[in-house]
Amino acid sequence: MLDAKRGLVLRAPGPNGFVRDLDMARSSTPLHPAHADLESILVTEQAIKRRTRRLGTEIHETYGDEEITVIAIINGALLFTADLLRAISNPVRLDCIRISSYRNETRSLGRPQLLHSLTLDVTNRHVLLIDDILDTGKTLSMVVDLIHQLNPASIKTCVLLDKKGRREVPFDADFVGFEIPDKFVVGYGLDFAERYRNLPCIGVLKPHLQNPPEWA
Ligand code: 5GP
Ligand code: MG
Image (tube, rainbow, N blue to C red; front, side, top):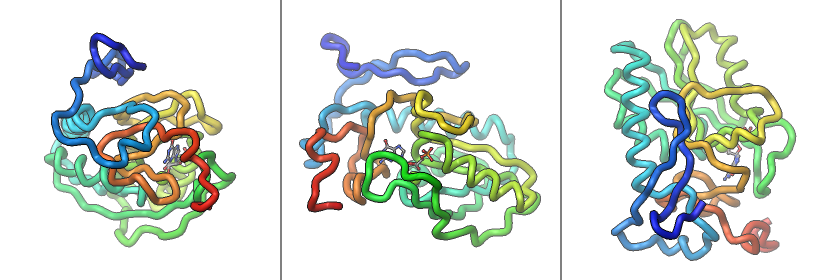
């Protein structure tokens, strides 16, 4: 992952679905204090910004000038959705859905729970579901099934991160920010026990911080 000469290198889907290396310069802004808890940074703040702008363009190209009903899966997708919405030039309606699947653990616990449902009517609407990360696929496939029952005009999905190797349910997102390896990541909306969501980058926590007894 770390290339000494070129800085941080990771794999992300290119414009035609190819995987390419991203060569990222380090941030010139001061480090967030929570960086000290990270073992490594997988996606820098600049890479997120650049990819989010590109995703906004891809989404606009896909939908033309149609209105989109964006459904963010909170809390994880909060930060990504906020930035992505500003990169989408279509008319947009926003709703949120709350799902719980991880609690304070670093592995998925069985079935995702629906904690708060939609408030907007999505019948005959173009729905774009946004989540922070696609892991086993259980959360998004459950939410897609739920929304299908409401007869939308279409459903597409967009995730910032994709851990392709971890799928337990077959699922491909329509728009993917970055493919990442099978590591538990935090930052930019992703938490561990509700901490680290405010980190501007995506990183891997130091192992001794992943299960501190006082947070359980
Ligand atoms: P799935 O249902 O696909 O297994 O998991 C999706 C949800 O699990 C995501 O919305 C996210 O809340 C959580 N998740 C999966 N992998 C990670 C991870 O590496 N870090 C964090 N913080 N959450 C994750
Ligand atoms: Mg989530």
